[in-house]
Image (tube, rainbow over all chains, first blue to last red; front, side, top):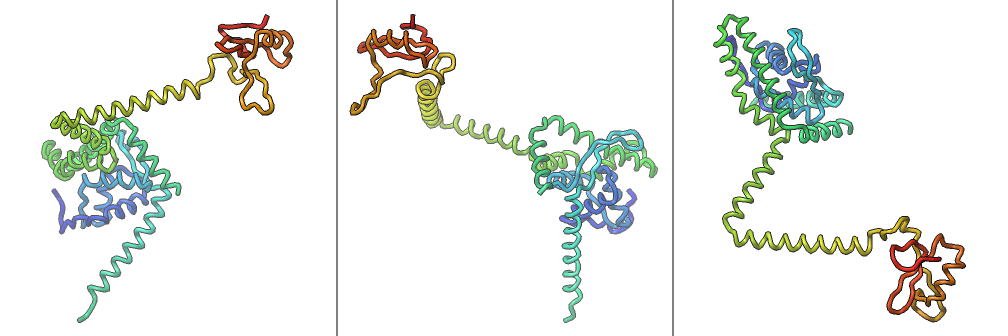
Length: 113
Length: 194
């Protein structure tokens, strides 16, 4: 089990944002998604692999992602997830609100006396 | 707007899609995931069994996520309805007198409503049992100052109508205690025009 560093658990609520962002790069299946997120975080984040699926269903119900059964390179059937136009818009809004949140926390933590 | 519609559509589709189908899809998706993870672990040098166990461990228990995914899908609604029904039956079993009262009340209520509905349909709504019932009319005289339809006629009046009327395809009559009633349709029984 090669997980080198602190293995930050993904914060509740940020998983949706990470999924949207990662799917905006290319459509992929659930397993690929978990590994891509960890890889993009330079292995600092650990995604609960099972917890990605309920999140995917929620996002699909919001109309932000679409699903499609496709054949992988290893000729296996797998369910692929793809960002919709609405998902792309939602990603923009979620990103903006995440940035506001980060800078707000930054202000508080940078306060001196 | 469009994505609201799409979201609603997805939920409806999930509800109507046969549950076993959706569960089978999910099983396939989960087992695909576990196989991919196990293969990855083998590439990193684990043994077969070890790789599978590690994959399951990292996934975090498939049953839990199976339930969570179902919850997110709205399948839970159907389960809840079944559970509510079972609960209701159990409660009614526990107090049979109350149950009998409720069932009798509902039964009489529904029966009365259905009975009245049948009468209203038969008397007011249902078409008369003749071909083209909308063309059926009663022939009567309207007399100034008398507030009643003069649609009861003597035999000779009927014969007069039946032989001379041009406005009707056919004229027929039936006998009541107090006179003839003339109509223009083919009555099943009663008088026919000659």
